[in-house]
Image (cartoon, rainbow, N blue to C red; front, side, top):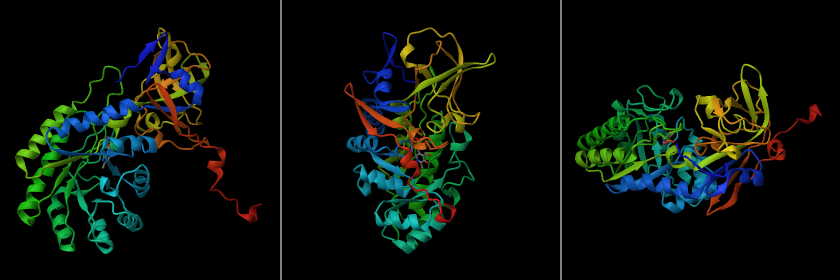
Length: 418
Ligand SMILES: Cc1ncc(COP(=O)(O)O)c(C=O)c1O
């Protein structure tokens, strides 16, 4: 987990006092450090590109804010997009269609048409999707998503590659699917698998890539089709807890590229990290509204709930928390950090040792860059919050907060009820 500097009892984020950012922009607010974002992208790209031609497709579902996408566009990133909405958002941030790969699941024909119109390469998830795309345009640049029979992830909800998964084409049907694609007139360029999100060890990645290598060679031998790239998906772990070990991306890069270079004629690797690139670039700042000591539990009631950050409630995820304006104070008790949502599951953190809290304190929630804002909602009719970028000791608003007008805009009361 990334540690932050302390200056006179104040948490420093991107060279600025976190509590002052909260004061300037209000809370809750997501704050991203541009330097960290660029450094994360470069570290993963450099780890692989020293061995092979590398395309890092940032999985923008993790965080699809335009300013974040623009920074990654400047860095040379490619994109993994899962919906036509993500495709359009990335194009708005300056990505050319050729730098986006659309990987949908349960894809509607309408969406296939939309993506095809935009000329965005499509990673086929099912036999039905292949047949339907053939009726739209067999000139499309395609690859195929295989279920590699290897799963990994921080919890069951995000394991995608295990046998029987809803994602991809079963590995035993891989060669047949490429054969069918050729018959239909396509010329598939790549092969893809994604095992899940936030897995801990290198082995599942290696196992999954071995399956992709085996299938690549079978496709070449049996169909005479030489694929141009192997796409190993995303899923690199990020430490959320203090002292949790980091994933060794250098080791994975070296092992995986070695295998591909030794065992195939493929010379381009694609990968799709989302979490790894954005997670630790961002904190969520939330204000303490309320301190409640029940005798059984101590609560810090803050203004961010699972509408703002759903991961703890949805996945049981751990997010480290600190009081940004009491950064050097000794811990005095254990507290649950809870939000304003009317559900007892609305916890940001449980049983955390913290200094004595007071109303108005600013709580920093760590690792809030991935699957945080992008999964936020307006539940309980609470408009979504602001996002701010920090760069060179300066802050810039990159997303304004929604208003009640935004929430009500699309709703209609039928005339007969008025
Ligand atoms: C196909 C695909 N690629 C990449 C990712 C990104 O995973 P992560 O953010 O864990 O790197 C996902 C996440 O669900 C995915 O479904």
